[in-house]
Length: 339
Image (tube, rainbow, N blue to C red; front, side, top):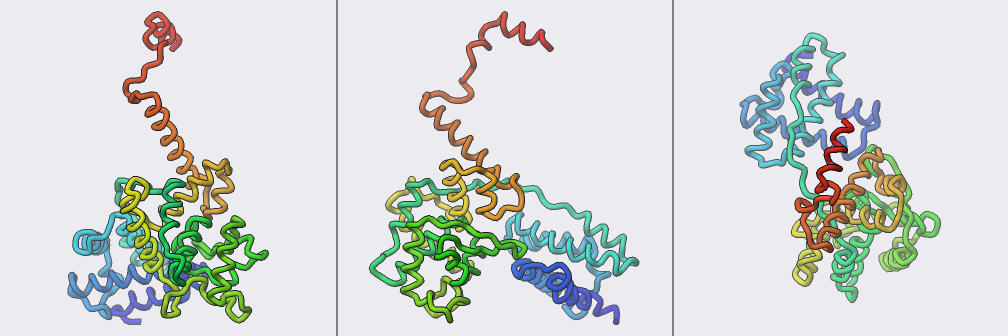
């Protein structure tokens, strides 16, 4: 193997053999890593003036990677989270290379030392129950496309699925136990079964019957296809949501946030389940979280909302609240003396 092809050789093995064959990486992970290294090659040609076929591992040092990350942020205008996602893919690749190329161990470890960039967490947008009703009232049920779009919006909320999960769901996934549950396949190719509300099951069955998805030979067909018969994309689902969110917002500006994504609907489902008394451990399983700590964020958000509501009802600001015992100097001095 020549020096000029060592990067191409190892990257090819990594993407075509190691990730899918040895660790069973999901399709989404493969696509994300492929996109990362496609961008890196584009950066190499346009900014470093190194052609793709000439790029070597030796040339990809810490400084090269840092320049690549800056290019992603400053010239491609990607978010910090996207920048960190690209860096995670680079870290994973070079971790894989460590035992294979010991002569580059120090260079690799320098790359692995590049930290993730801190950034302010974006505000979590979600819909109230009234907001969900306003959104679901928008599709025109007198048309076939309107009925399909209603089911897409309802499916997002009913299952709390990720956008890729609704894209990947097939007819067979929606017919378990007479439609009482739906099978969703999430991160790491992990599948879970989400129970369905009887009212939603009625809509789902009507949709599948209208679109011919109950036939046995259609079981492997996507549950949602575009008007040209192709499987919906993530962008397609996001477009459907944005379309009806915009029309609902014009009628109910106080109910529909300015920024509403499929993940916002997922958050909405989690908050709804929490307020309905469903325990966090079950919400974790429904959403497909790997850890209960991820799910706990909804409890904190709901607690903050309750606090604000109580303050509003009392007509006071939290900064003005001072318990009566704090105004009692002798009592306060006694409490301090306990230390």
